[in-house]
Length: 402
Ligand code: PLP
Image (cartoon, rainbow, N blue to C red; front, side, top):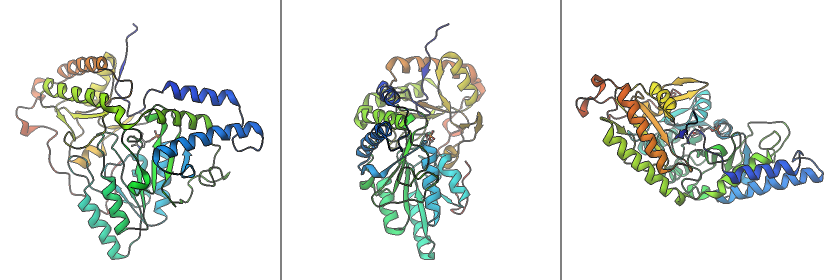
């Protein structure tokens, strides 16, 4: 049967833009050369690479030399955290992606709590920075993502940047903007950021290409060493086709273009709330990316629901993160004080239509009504699985679970 699949997992990876595919094909057609060579074909590859660098730098408000191409968001995050750890203590928000959390834990880092909406607790961050400063402990890096991958919640980077400059001026202020880039404005110098991780496949470019974009005057100890490429900052042959695809995709969207998608997301949420008893939309009252919708449904086995939706023609993800095929409890939900049971993430993308939303609603309401037993439904709001209780207290020295 030739059934159209509704894809609402764009936060995991989104549909490639035709412009990105065309730009990559052009590079591949031009030459097979290594861009670091001395001859004409290498020069052609270098031209593609530098054009892409320039285009991405303009979108970030930095000089082209500040854009260092990497293999994606994970490498960029790992690099920023490990370079920052050489300077001193690693602080990271409790809702960071594993690509930040894992290297931060290895470096003995400490997590900063978030509130029940998943917004970084500015008072806790300030208190900890002040305490470390009084104790004479240098802070190497403060890492807070621009927007969360599960809930889409946008973080107050401007205030955090001011705080870091005042209380830990030697620290690298890093932000994982893998989800936010191209959806919200990201002026790196204006936000006082020292390093920003971005990734091509979240915005319509190819998988396996990203960048770490450096703030003015920032230099970081390299993560990958060897051939001295990327001005000695990142060894390994750069990928001009990947960079060209990344730049072509990034150049298409500007934040205001997302308004129709936001309206579709809002309609999805409003209908889910009215159709599914007890459903809670997480972080509904704070600033979020226009693409993300994260809900908790009491009594639902979310992993089974995801499989049932897939069979019915809807691709979405459960609230727990999936790595190497294994489901792990969501660190984001527990940091916000929620259970991740019954949590589903719908993430819309640039291809999402009104019809997609209509069909997704039909499928998900049908799946939930079949999977949820009547006794699982909440008799009263107070007995919900996803209660809005405050996040658990977390000692700042404690490492966060991934
Ligand atoms: N950071 C965030 C917030 C993400 O959502 C992801 C991917 O899901 C990554 C980092 C990793 O990016 P990449 O897949 O390019 O390695």
